[in-house]
Image (tube, rainbow, N blue to C red; front, side):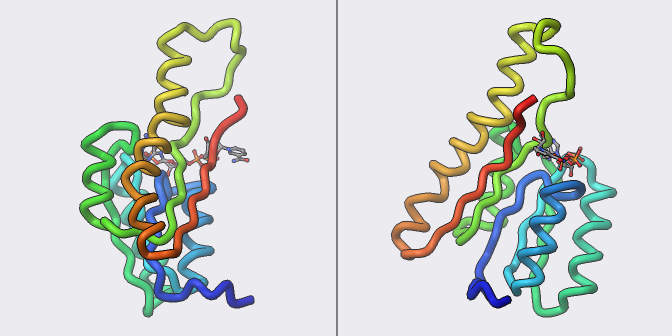
Length: 143
Ligand SMILES: NC(=O)c1ccc[n+]([C@@H]2O[C@H](COP(=O)([O-])OP(=O)(O)OC[C@H]3O[C@@H](n4cnc5c(N)ncnc54)[C@H](OP(=O)(O)O)[C@@H]3O)[C@@H](O)[C@H]2O)c1
């Protein structure tokens, strides 16, 4: 199936492993250039190299950083200032019983799963509208 997105640029947050990695591979399969992020450099480099090898026509950029911080977001947006596709993801809070979670735990989860996507959408949506193409997917957690 051709989704008609070949040559587009995507930011895929939190993408060295799991769902983010799967999104990055699926986008690369469609010929989309991908900018990947994660905090751990080793797994990120490995994923980036795997995608590069298997998708020679696709540009793969990896940015090491915490996407829930302003510095992490700034670095990704500097590497890919005009994304056509934004996949928001931040790994999610650890599993557990909500009765045991402190206010700080909740704030951290809201920061990662809601406020971080909002910041990235704010930074990219106007450009998408001006270029008349944009897709935003938010991966979140129900835990
Ligand atoms: N797997 C499922 O079945 C499922 C179902 C529904 C929802 N979800 C939700 O989907 C999200 C992803 O889950 P997953 O299973 O794909 O997780 P995962 O396999 O543990 O992968 C998480 C990825 O995110 C990166 N990451 C985590 N925190 C980050 C941060 N602050 N900044 C940048 N990168 C970060 C990790 O790399 P580093 O640790 O190196 O940063 C890793 O690449 C979570 O919110 C989860 O709750 C998952």
